[in-house]
Length: 157
Image 1: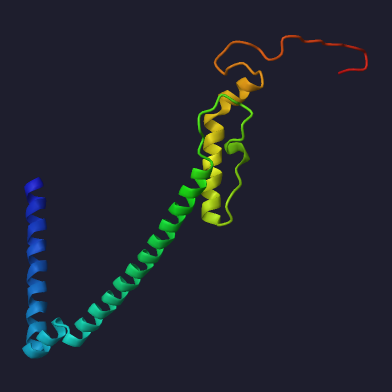
Image 2: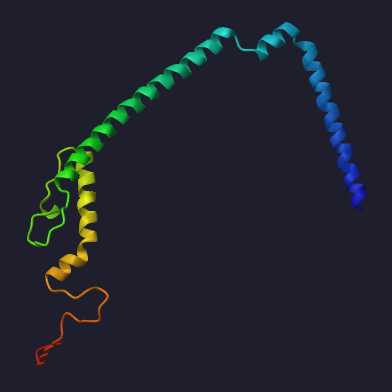
């Protein structure tokens, strides 16, 4: 049964192949060879125009990347100087002015990076600030509120 189906499918495919070969031969005879070759090949000026377009695109991308590089280098210089002004030097005085009194720059890119820098410092100094103001460490079992006073009356819920 399976062999019969495979044989039937093969004969159908062979018939399709014969039809396609016939169509191909008719088409090849109807088109002159010189015209057929000219249809398959591009003219040199079309190739040159395409290459010139690609060259112009590459040059414009190169200029844009160079401009972006100059902007990023300026951003790095500004951020270097900004962070250098707020470089934290070791001190035992907790009341000393540190990064908490930093001001942000005017440029949007440096301002954004400055906010990220301050946020990172806040995150990494959270435990020290809480300790400075008398809060217990996060991993301790001390409770902040040890005394509860509840008053119930008839007017309450």
